[in-house]
Amino acid sequence: MALAGTGLIAIWNDILPELREDFFEWHPREHMVERLGIPGFLRGRRYIAVDGGVEFLTLYEVTSTDVLVSDIYKERLTQPTPWSTKTLPGFFNNERGACQIEFSQSYAMGGAMLTLRFEAEAGKEAVLIDAVKAAMAGLVDAPRVTGAHLVKNDVSLTGGNSGNQRGRVITLPHLVVLIEGSGLEGVRAAGEKFLGNACLAELGAKPEVTRGLYQLEYSIQNLAEK
Image (cartoon, rainbow, N blue to C red; front, side, top):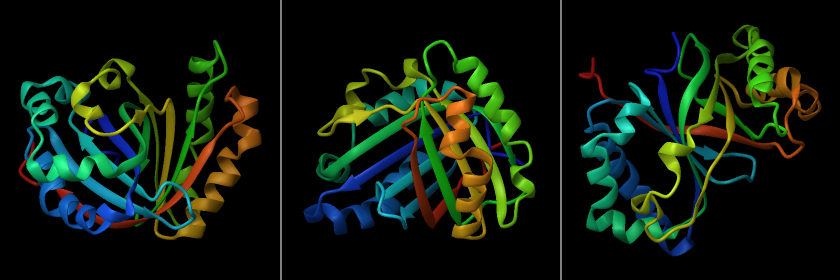
């Protein structure tokens, strides 16, 4: 078992206090349901931070990144609903990646998630990706870990899309590791053991690594999608 499909949308965001309650209702009642209605969207999940980082993490697993250039997806981006138009400008610290999956192993969806966001030193991206994949090979055998994934943002799918910039500033990740499991301390410990900051630097990553620890709030799955 691994991530569903070969593409992943990963979104981090905080929300302005005056739109916080609206966000909590809009996201599961309308927005994620709408996204899962797009052909190729397989599963959506939202997590909330437990370590003081960017508060919300949303993941969408898609059949492939081709879904993200489909006419129906572009239409949803450029023609948001009234509720979306009201809520989206409240996003800040907003980072969004439309990612190809480089490595994915799991045996269950985890309620705890550790994310690592980092960038390769100049000229070292391919070597770094291969080295991180090798370092992750034993992660799913670590205590309380149920899955480990490495994804790479595709700039051609995320840069300059006016629909995604509506009322908010969005930055882009580069490489992202996701470690999911059945316990917060388990995924945190596994991340430090297998991919600590010093280890990533030795493998070719820049020193700035952003770590976030999250707890699952809910998940919606498109069970009818083949």
